[in-house]
Image 1 (cartoon, rainbow, N blue to C red):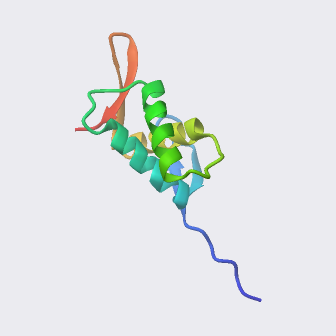
Image 2: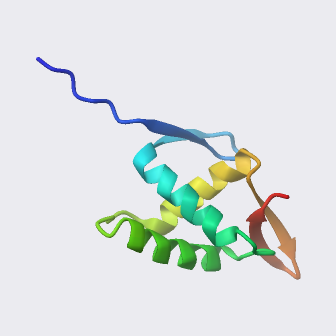
Length: 101
């Protein structure tokens, strides 16, 4: 009996709680690329702006994706924050996201 091919997983970490869970790499990588593409050259975007950008990018790259794009966006963004790639800051009372310098 042949073994089923194991799919590659990425372990994500929440920057404040340290909780971890895994996401299939085939989902994680396109979301990571979409977040980085959206934040590149930006001085800061609200979560809503970031999510709107990611939704449009993911719908083009993965037209059959039926899961919650905002949920994956926040999960991957938090992991990128814990890895020091993205940061969250407050400006004029707004919570914004940007790439770290």
